[in-house]
Length: 215
Image 1 (cartoon, rainbow, N blue to C red):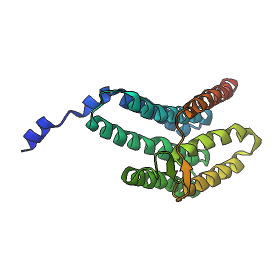
Image 2: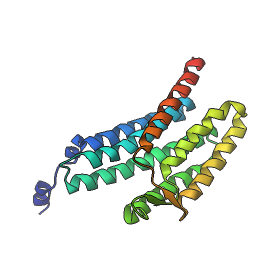
Image 3: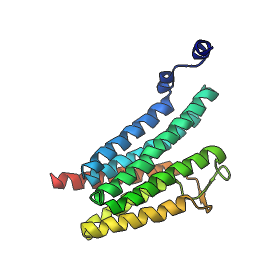
Image 4: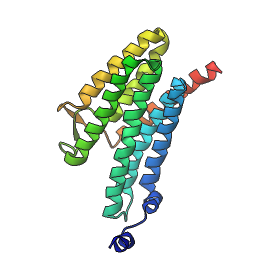
């Protein structure tokens, strides 16, 4: 019986050829690079990684909606893959940034847990219930967290390291709480992608310049 089921089911890697999934996996690579740099204390590079993870997360949905001929199975698989990658990009990565910036102090572990648990709860809820309507989320979307975190890092030089670690901690806890609220928030799409493009490219240049000056 198992052999018959195996013959009826497509191979796992067949979905890797799907263009939206390729885009999702490039976003995952960006997140993994962000994790690597965060662990090593290279926070400008980590922020660049998380910014591009957001951009590819937006584009995989855009590509999926415009691509003709996708099967229902491909759509369902793509949605699940996107959700799994979101946990890495918007849960694990910011949690590691917090831990690393806090020099892996034990007091930062609860914050890291809250960030990852929040992402798991929110994404699971969204997978079951979806949007309030076609243009409205319940609570603040997870990708907003890291976009705001990236903006905050522009002002890192104005603070002592220990002070900024507390600022990051407080910000991420506030955002985690907002992720789980029932407050209706708009689902950005359409021409907002051009705003995101500009934001990501501009901040990539800024943090790239910071990296260049540290060489």
